[in-house]
Length: 165
Picture (tube, rainbow, N blue to C red):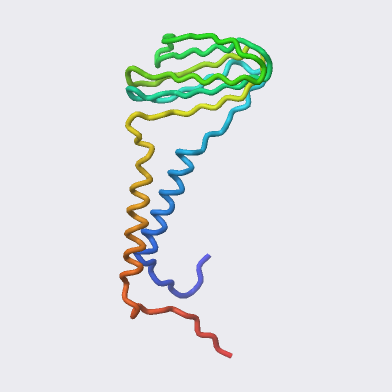
């Protein structure tokens, strides 16, 4: 796609600002974006899982369309059932369940709404908050880039196009 000519190198301050903003926005989307899951009446029980560390928590919210019995089953990596609970919910009622892990490993959960449509939201709360690491790194890179930009001397070469008539 090239053309003749050379572009000037990217300034380090611009690269740091771009990296910092990318980390901040990426961390925001990674941490805050929770999409509700629509579960149909004819769908099989909803199953999902995650790698968890000790004291991490699944926070599961289920809102049902009709009166039903909600069953929540927590399983470990080999498929052994760690807990199984049932709750009777009225139409439009929301049930929020928090499942805290006692040891690290892969855990899966199964939600059965017994032939009733539901909206499911799942959030994982980390004890060590490792998912928050992009924020301080992004802020550090952004601050460094802005500092370098303001500290640069005004004698830097300004590149303007020269137009000929």
